[in-house]
Image (cartoon, rainbow, N blue to C red; front, side, top):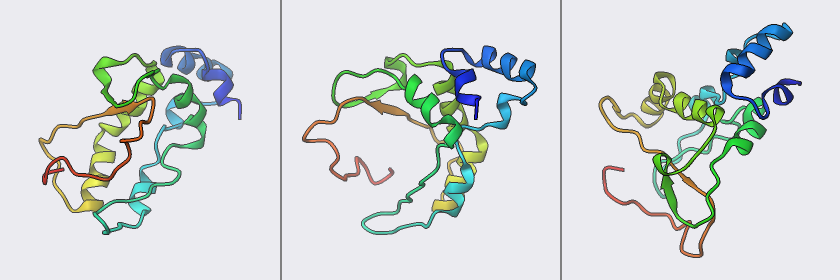
Length: 140
């Protein structure tokens, strides 16, 4: 598929224009996430409620998102406001902030997220102390 070649190194609006001019359709046809993967995933309950959503990032977007992922040279979690990233990575964040994804999470975990804040962090390096399962609070 030539989608990846069209988008590399270009911002979202340029990619939209190229796709439209090439007659291959709008970039809007290609979503960075597949919310149906979340809907279809089995809800695991041990040691806590979670899902494994293999294929959540769509194949058309995998390489794009890896290319635009923020460069983080240190260990730890970093809020998006502290890192630089491209417009296509922002599209992923926008989709995950969207109603469709929120509703899928609400349905899967039987929770109401209305009025609840969303927090995104990125990681660049793993440290020996990272990766241990924990909850920061009962509300998480």
